[in-house]
Structure formats: structure tokens, C-alpha cells
Image 1: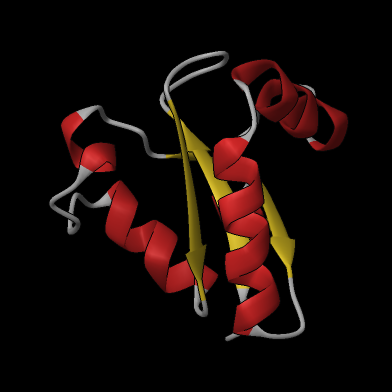
Image 2: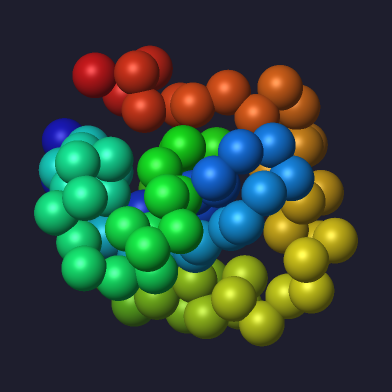
Length: 95
């Protein structure tokens, strides 16, 4: 299902984090997991989808992504743990 989303990937619990935005969450996470991206997530093995939120339009998703990227690490960890306290990989639930 294509819908604007903001997402956070982690290398492991409390590990390296990556925040991104996409209009096709399943496709984008598949690309990260299969090292189809030549970026930060590939270099640091950041493949676990630990948080995502849907948005009505891409402008609001991009605005939220920029907001989260400016947050300090503690705020990002709290956001993840409020929705996903076990740091489970949410990708399988999307399929």
C-alpha cells in the first residue's frame, strides 16, 4: 500500500538509528534490508524497522521526518519504545 510514511530503522536495540520518509514503506524497507541503498543504512547495517507512522500527504511526512531528525537521541528512543518496547522488527507485520 502506497502512503506517505516516516520510519525509523535500527541496527539493534538501542543501536544506530536512521530516520527516513517514503511513499512506499514496504518497498523502501525491502531495499534497506537487501542493501539496495548505497547509504548510511547499508554502511552501518541498519535494517530493523522499529517505528513508522503514516501521513495524509508527503509534505506532512517530510515535515515530521525533519522534526524527528532534529531531536536528540533520548527523544527518538522514547518514541520507539512507546510504540515498540521490544524493538521488534515491524517489517514482517507489514507484509
